[in-house]
Image (cartoon, rainbow, N blue to C red):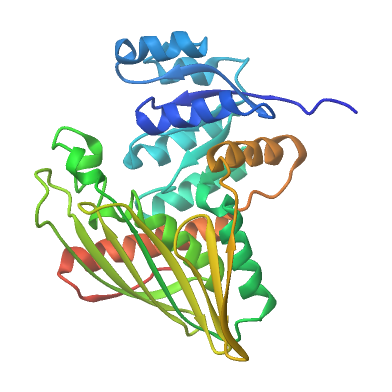
Length: 333
């Protein structure tokens, strides 16, 4: 049996999440991606990490683009940089894995996708919760029609992360994080909703800061109207204990993830609830391996570009609605 090819990559952005991605790949015995270099604004801050991983860290993005040994870049950078970095990487012939969100505006997202298509490179967006076995089981319940006509979906992804933010951190600014926890947490649920129900056509959002010292909002809730006719409610808090819940209601039953490893199902024909528990998986390693498979074998990455665009469009509308104080906003196509 021939050995699968390894994708040689550089990590761009070595904050907490960038380091998590590198560690996930290094810890996975079947990893199909190898991080050979790293880039961050202040290499001295992560010298020990680079040494432990056995790669050089630079502050020169152009040096990565010019490196012929690098096939791909993994971007764990501020959201506002994604479009320009994707376009530059694509022009240099590098495949790109970018952490969510793809971009902060629909125009930038379209530009990024166009650059990758024009240069025939793979572009993948990192929504790691797509790789949760419990979510995949929920997806199968929905796609099989066993829940009937989808009526409504509810989601909550919250945590205490905002307490660690300061105004001099990009994660603590409204410019990079409009509508509070949406870009950090809620967007995962938005992506799950879009994958299950399709694009969103209209949103109404309320977002406010009640307790955090950083400028980012800590309390955000969104009402969603989907093209398919279903409705949705999405909540994300940045100043409360960790909470993760996703529930889809249909005309013949509902399915609920009370956490990321369980699925509960209830049907009209048999109201006795069934419960399934799934083993934890390293979703970061899984998404990086899926990216490598997309590059080397042309395997479809689970997050399609149409879904990524639908997510950015909905996120943009949510940000606009939140900024207006709760006006309803139509989602751009």
